[in-house]
Figure 1 (spheres, chains in turn blue, yellow):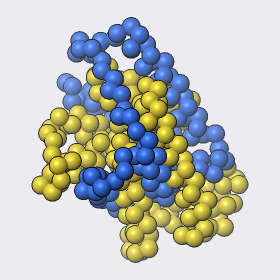
Figure 2: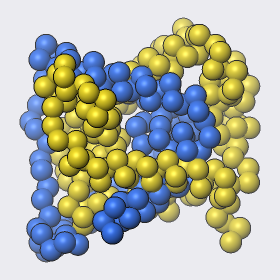
Figure 3: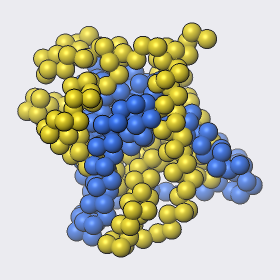
Figure 4: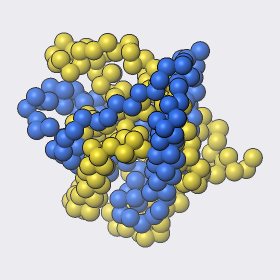
Amino acid sequence: MKTLLYLLIGIIFGITMYKSEAASWFRIYEMFRFESFHMYGIIGTALAVGVVSTFLIKHYNIKSFYGSPIKFIPKEKGFKRYLFGGIIFGLGWALVGACPGPIFTLLGAGFPIVGVVLVGALMGTFLYGSLRNKLPH
Amino acid sequence: MEFIYQPWPWYSSGMVIALVMLLLQLSNKKFGMSSNLRTLCSICGAGKHTAFFRFNWRDQKWNLTVVLGAIIGGYIAANFMTDNSSIIINENTIAHLETLGFESAGSAYLPTELFGKDSLFDPKILTLLFFGGLFVGFGARYAGGCTSGHAISGLSNLQLPSLIAVFGFFIGGFIMIHLLFPLIF
């Protein structure tokens, strides 16, 4: 039953990534050239609703579907890892025009070559895990 | 029902993304796509080499299920919910892309110059896509999250680290598009 719920959430997410065009390389390119409001509108709306819903969950101590209290784990404090990691991520995002969610969606949408991007992303994740102790955080 | 075949406007798209996050919050889970890359590394045996991948990946099965859904969702949207997948972007953007050699701008979902069938046999394109992916994977884990984990759920929870990371995303994207693209393409 729970598995079905997660599958359904994923399907809704995948359809939205495709239909919103957030999974399109062209939209990402246009966003980084500041020539369209579209992507900023998507992220801004998600964020505006998200800020309110997150606040309401905390304020009213809303319980999860399973009756447990909902935990919000704060991100670890730091500066370098977020800035450097963010810049590296941004370089890749702008080049391949897809962040991790859309990489999966595009595979389903019929672009097998995105598998090369996925293999690269897995290698990048592995590389980070291997070099982690040597990097400034 | 005609609207279902059209591209979704930004406001409804943003609201559905917020709904996805809310459903995961109410399941006591975190909305974050890039952690699945770590889980997949772990399943492939990366834990034998590095402690970072030594964890019980079965606890992450829920998120892999979301990923499976995201793949199925892409299939459904592309095959049953779209009759013209061309992306109508800004005319200035199209004109600029044409100067870089992207003739498919305005008439495709993804540039055929990068993602078309011929690219599978083009070493330069394959290298670009691989390294682009490498940067995405490396950067997401270094920063502790990607667009979903930082830009949506982190910022929704008013996390300063997420703001720094999103700032970084845009610095990186800006450098790539404005400084590196003219050198690459």
